[in-house]
Amino acid sequence: AQSVTQLDSHVSVSEGTPVLLRCNYSSSYSPSLFWYVQHPNKGLQLLLKYTSAATLVKGINGFEAEFKKSETSFHLTKPSAHMSDAAEYFCVVRNGGSQGNLIFGKGTKLSVKP
Amino acid sequence: NAGVTQTPKFQVLKTGQSMTLQCAQDMNHNSMYWYRQDPGMGLRLIYYSASEGTTDKGEVPNGYNVSRLNKREFSLRLESAAPSQTSVYFCASSPPGSVFYNSPLHFGNGTRLTVT
Image (cartoon, each protein chain N blue to C red):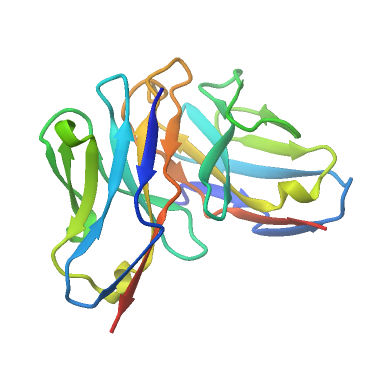
Protein backbone atom coordinates (compact mmCIF):
# COMPACT_ATOMS: atom_id res chain seq x y z
CA ALA A 1 0.00 0.00 0.00
CA GLN A 2 1.08 3.54 -0.70
CA SER A 3 1.86 6.04 2.03
CA VAL A 4 3.65 9.34 2.36
CA THR A 5 5.42 10.92 5.32
CA GLN A 6 6.28 14.57 5.60
CA LEU A 7 9.11 14.70 8.08
CA ASP A 8 8.50 18.22 9.40
CA SER A 9 5.18 19.69 10.43
CA HIS A 10 6.63 23.21 10.52
CA VAL A 11 9.67 24.78 8.83
CA SER A 12 10.80 28.34 9.41
CA VAL A 13 13.33 30.12 7.16
CA SER A 14 14.50 33.66 6.60
CA GLU A 15 13.71 35.45 3.37
CA GLY A 16 16.43 34.81 0.82
CA THR A 17 17.63 31.55 2.37
CA PRO A 18 17.08 28.06 0.91
CA VAL A 19 13.95 26.03 1.53
CA LEU A 20 13.92 22.26 2.09
CA LEU A 21 10.67 20.41 2.75
CA ARG A 22 11.16 16.69 3.23
CA CYS A 23 8.94 13.89 2.00
CA ASN A 24 9.38 10.11 2.07
CA TYR A 25 7.02 7.74 0.35
CA SER A 26 6.20 4.08 0.38
CA SER A 27 4.87 2.49 -2.78
CA SER A 28 4.70 -0.97 -4.22
CA TYR A 29 4.27 0.50 -7.68
CA SER A 30 6.36 2.92 -9.67
CA PRO A 31 4.90 5.95 -7.97
CA SER A 32 3.46 9.19 -9.20
CA LEU A 33 4.31 11.96 -6.77
CA PHE A 34 3.05 15.50 -6.43
CA TRP A 35 3.64 18.59 -4.34
CA TYR A 36 0.71 20.92 -3.69
CA VAL A 37 0.68 24.31 -1.96
CA GLN A 38 -2.15 25.79 0.06
CA HIS A 39 -2.24 29.46 0.92
CA PRO A 40 -4.45 30.56 3.83
CA ASN A 41 -8.16 30.15 3.16
CA LYS A 42 -7.51 28.83 -0.33
CA GLY A 43 -7.70 25.52 -2.10
CA LEU A 44 -4.67 23.48 -3.06
CA GLN A 45 -2.60 24.33 -6.11
CA LEU A 46 -0.25 21.98 -7.93
CA LEU A 47 3.42 22.93 -7.62
CA LEU A 48 4.96 20.05 -9.54
CA LYS A 49 4.63 16.35 -10.29
CA TYR A 50 6.85 13.36 -10.94
CA THR A 51 5.57 10.67 -13.29
CA SER A 52 8.64 8.54 -14.11
CA ALA A 53 10.28 10.92 -16.56
CA ALA A 54 13.19 13.11 -15.36
CA THR A 55 14.06 12.60 -11.70
CA LEU A 56 14.57 16.33 -11.15
CA VAL A 57 11.26 18.04 -11.56
CA LYS A 58 10.86 21.79 -11.89
CA GLY A 59 7.66 23.45 -10.76
CA ILE A 60 6.14 26.86 -10.47
CA ASN A 61 7.54 29.77 -8.48
CA GLY A 62 11.12 28.44 -8.54
CA PHE A 63 10.40 25.21 -6.67
CA GLU A 64 11.86 21.88 -7.68
CA ALA A 65 11.93 18.35 -6.33
CA GLU A 66 14.19 15.37 -6.87
CA PHE A 67 12.90 11.83 -6.99
CA LYS A 68 15.39 9.46 -5.31
CA LYS A 69 14.26 5.87 -5.58
CA SER A 70 17.08 4.51 -3.42
CA GLU A 71 16.06 6.80 -0.57
CA THR A 72 12.29 6.71 -1.33
CA SER A 73 12.32 10.47 -1.08
CA PHE A 74 10.82 13.37 -2.99
CA HIS A 75 12.06 16.48 -1.18
CA LEU A 76 10.93 19.94 -2.26
CA THR A 77 13.52 22.71 -2.52
CA LYS A 78 13.85 26.34 -3.49
CA PRO A 79 17.15 28.24 -3.57
CA SER A 80 15.83 31.48 -2.09
CA ALA A 81 12.66 31.88 -0.05
CA HIS A 82 10.24 34.73 -0.66
CA MET A 83 7.68 36.07 1.77
CA SER A 84 4.93 34.92 -0.59
CA ASP A 85 6.11 31.31 -0.17
CA ALA A 86 4.63 31.18 3.32
CA ALA A 87 1.95 28.52 3.06
CA GLU A 88 1.26 24.87 3.78
CA TYR A 89 2.79 22.28 1.48
CA PHE A 90 1.51 18.78 0.86
CA CYS A 91 3.40 15.83 -0.57
CA VAL A 92 1.08 13.41 -2.36
CA VAL A 93 1.46 9.91 -3.80
CA ARG A 94 -0.95 8.35 -6.24
CA ASN A 95 -2.58 5.15 -5.12
CA GLY A 96 -2.12 2.77 -8.00
CA GLY A 97 -5.03 0.60 -6.96
CA SER A 98 -8.40 0.60 -8.62
CA GLN A 99 -9.56 3.55 -6.58
CA GLY A 100 -6.98 5.78 -8.19
CA ASN A 101 -6.89 7.92 -5.10
CA LEU A 102 -4.26 10.38 -4.05
CA ILE A 103 -2.70 9.82 -0.62
CA PHE A 104 -1.86 13.12 1.08
CA GLY A 105 0.87 13.75 3.60
CA LYS A 106 -0.10 15.65 6.72
CA GLY A 107 1.43 18.86 5.48
CA THR A 108 4.37 21.11 6.29
CA LYS A 109 3.71 24.69 7.23
CA LEU A 110 6.39 27.00 5.88
CA SER A 111 7.00 30.29 7.64
CA VAL A 112 9.24 32.94 6.07
CA LYS A 113 10.77 35.59 8.30
CA PRO A 114 11.77 38.99 6.91
CA ASN B 1 -12.33 31.20 -15.79
CA ALA B 2 -14.08 29.97 -12.62
CA GLY B 3 -12.56 26.46 -12.32
CA VAL B 4 -14.08 24.67 -9.32
CA THR B 5 -16.72 26.61 -7.38
CA GLN B 6 -17.95 25.57 -3.95
CA THR B 7 -20.89 26.94 -2.02
CA PRO B 8 -21.33 27.97 0.71
CA LYS B 9 -17.95 29.23 1.90
CA PHE B 10 -18.91 29.05 5.57
CA GLN B 11 -21.64 27.20 7.44
CA VAL B 12 -22.56 26.63 11.07
CA LEU B 13 -24.91 23.77 11.89
CA LYS B 14 -26.38 22.36 15.04
CA THR B 15 -26.01 18.67 15.79
CA GLY B 16 -28.62 16.70 13.87
CA GLN B 17 -29.24 19.29 11.17
CA SER B 18 -28.76 18.41 7.54
CA MET B 19 -27.20 20.32 4.68
CA THR B 20 -25.81 19.92 1.19
CA LEU B 21 -22.48 21.28 0.01
CA GLN B 22 -22.49 22.22 -3.63
CA CYS B 23 -19.65 21.91 -6.12
CA ALA B 24 -19.50 22.77 -9.80
CA GLN B 25 -16.67 22.76 -12.32
CA ASP B 26 -16.54 24.34 -15.74
CA MET B 27 -13.48 22.54 -17.12
CA ASN B 28 -15.34 19.59 -18.65
CA HIS B 29 -13.60 17.23 -16.24
CA ASN B 30 -14.88 13.68 -15.86
CA SER B 31 -13.72 12.97 -12.32
CA MET B 32 -14.78 14.81 -9.18
CA TYR B 33 -13.87 14.35 -5.55
CA TRP B 34 -14.82 15.42 -2.04
CA TYR B 35 -12.12 15.71 0.62
CA ARG B 36 -12.11 16.85 4.20
CA GLN B 37 -9.16 18.62 5.78
CA ASP B 38 -8.51 18.50 9.50
CA PRO B 39 -5.51 20.00 11.34
CA GLY B 40 -2.48 17.72 11.20
CA MET B 41 -4.36 15.14 9.09
CA GLY B 42 -3.79 16.28 5.54
CA LEU B 43 -6.70 15.67 3.17
CA ARG B 44 -8.82 12.55 3.36
CA LEU B 45 -11.07 11.38 0.57
CA ILE B 46 -14.76 11.12 1.41
CA TYR B 47 -16.27 10.13 -1.94
CA TYR B 48 -15.31 10.39 -5.56
CA SER B 49 -16.98 10.11 -8.92
CA ALA B 50 -14.89 8.78 -11.76
CA SER B 51 -17.47 9.82 -14.32
CA GLU B 52 -21.04 11.03 -14.60
CA GLY B 53 -23.38 8.45 -13.12
CA THR B 54 -20.85 6.72 -10.87
CA THR B 55 -19.79 7.34 -7.28
CA ASP B 56 -17.48 5.45 -4.95
CA LYS B 57 -16.55 5.59 -1.30
CA GLY B 58 -13.23 6.95 -0.22
CA GLU B 59 -11.37 6.67 3.05
CA VAL B 60 -13.94 8.35 5.33
CA PRO B 61 -17.47 8.03 3.81
CA ASN B 62 -19.48 7.42 6.98
CA GLY B 63 -22.08 10.11 7.67
CA TYR B 64 -22.02 11.46 4.11
CA ASN B 65 -23.83 10.92 0.85
CA VAL B 66 -23.06 12.27 -2.61
CA SER B 67 -24.86 12.94 -5.84
CA ARG B 68 -23.27 13.38 -9.25
CA LEU B 69 -26.05 15.48 -10.66
CA ASN B 70 -24.47 15.88 -14.10
CA LYS B 71 -20.97 16.21 -15.49
CA ARG B 72 -20.50 19.65 -13.91
CA GLU B 73 -21.95 19.16 -10.44
CA PHE B 74 -21.09 16.92 -7.50
CA SER B 75 -22.83 17.55 -4.18
CA LEU B 76 -22.05 16.29 -0.68
CA ARG B 77 -24.85 15.81 1.83
CA LEU B 78 -24.71 15.52 5.59
CA GLU B 79 -27.99 13.95 6.68
CA SER B 80 -27.51 14.40 10.43
CA ALA B 81 -24.52 16.55 11.25
CA ALA B 82 -22.23 15.65 14.15
CA PRO B 83 -19.48 17.69 15.84
CA SER B 84 -16.92 15.23 14.39
CA GLN B 85 -17.84 16.55 10.96
CA THR B 86 -16.51 19.99 11.79
CA SER B 87 -13.91 20.42 9.10
CA VAL B 88 -12.94 22.18 5.91
CA TYR B 89 -14.39 20.44 2.87
CA PHE B 90 -12.75 20.61 -0.53
CA CYS B 91 -14.17 19.64 -3.85
CA ALA B 92 -11.78 18.79 -6.67
CA SER B 93 -11.94 17.71 -10.28
CA SER B 94 -9.56 16.19 -12.79
CA PRO B 95 -9.45 15.51 -16.53
CA PRO B 96 -10.63 12.30 -18.23
CA GLY B 97 -8.82 9.12 -17.35
CA SER B 98 -7.00 10.67 -14.44
CA VAL B 99 -8.40 8.30 -11.85
CA PHE B 100 -5.81 5.89 -13.15
CA TYR B 101 -3.25 8.28 -14.53
CA ASN B 102 -1.21 11.25 -13.45
CA SER B 103 -3.24 14.35 -14.03
CA PRO B 104 -3.38 16.73 -11.08
CA LEU B 105 -6.50 17.70 -9.23
CA HIS B 106 -8.02 21.16 -9.45
CA PHE B 107 -9.40 22.31 -6.11
CA GLY B 108 -12.12 24.68 -5.03
CA ASN B 109 -11.50 27.15 -2.21
CA GLY B 110 -13.27 25.07 0.40
CA THR B 111 -16.30 25.16 2.68
CA ARG B 112 -15.61 25.75 6.35
CA LEU B 113 -18.21 23.84 8.34
CA THR B 114 -18.72 24.03 12.09
CA VAL B 115 -21.13 21.70 13.87
CA THR B 116 -22.05 22.70 17.42
